[in-house]
Image 1: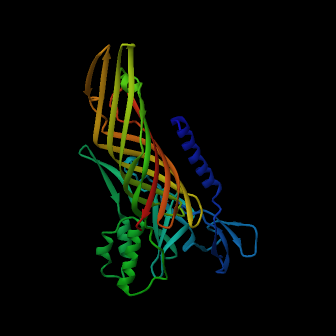
Image 2: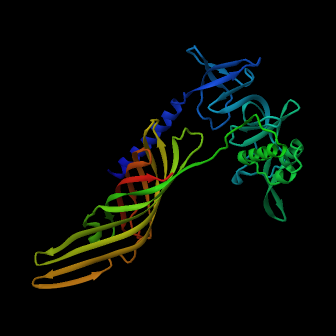
Image 3: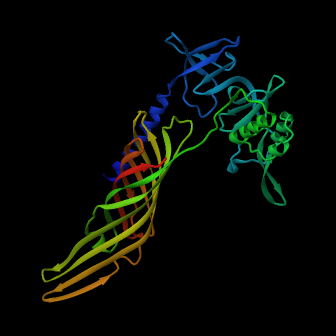
Length: 422
């Protein structure tokens, strides 16, 4: 497979996945809608495991064939896939929070949004979650018949010519006042972070302190990881282009099949129906090639070059993996990059000069040095069943030549088998 074909296939693959994701968001899940009058309607809800809180939902009542669209003011709440959402009109802070995007503006910047808040904890004390369209997470408590925003903001401040990151942590005082039934809450609240799990843990600590039980507590967001062994075989080709090293650029190199062995760690992305993951593996592999080239001046004067290059690499690969929606047997595709470090190498050329009846043999390094780090683009496909997986993976790397005058390109084909411990 040429590098151009590889790029075309890779782009086409992820374009197809993106289109499938956009057009395939109709995930009908059993759910319940609570009307403004308190009635419960059972049916199917189009649940796409939203990255952002939904502003509308599509609901198909039992016995009906068509979906109805509800906004947060049409219904009181709804439940789906173990999650509970409440319609609300809230204030949300829209200032950027990423360090690279912070501004010198300390004042709060509000938007008023009509959304479905996700209920994290309900009972005597409540906690709600809202991720707005800008990607910022906002949290709310409910008191005095109002959803009260827990105030938090990051900004920059210049002092004595130096810029520092500042935080408006007013939410800590709000929580101390809101949870004042627990005498130990002030010390706990002072350490709480403005994050879903940290705030939910604080509410859980409050209920343990008061001896009461929450009516509902959402399952906390956790990353699922898979860890295991990886092994297989790899075949490869190596080509050199350019420069005055004819014994490299004009040689016909023959590769061989070599074993590889390593470990993998897969991080399954949350709220993606376990279809997307970040797959990382660390492999020890080896390449060993031999190339021959004959330089002919005339029939009684010629030089035979025999080149041997062998490298052992410790390679880290990082890929984005997408699982096709099947059940027991799961097919997947993935793509990414790898970086290999050459832990050892053999690099020599043997030249045999024949001039009439005279023979002279010399041996020297084929290159004065090799590139220690090799970078490659990867793409592959495979399947998994239970704890086992198998994959065919293709890779294109920049080889071991460190010189701009002569470039090296490597092409790999891997057959890998994995065993997952958990």
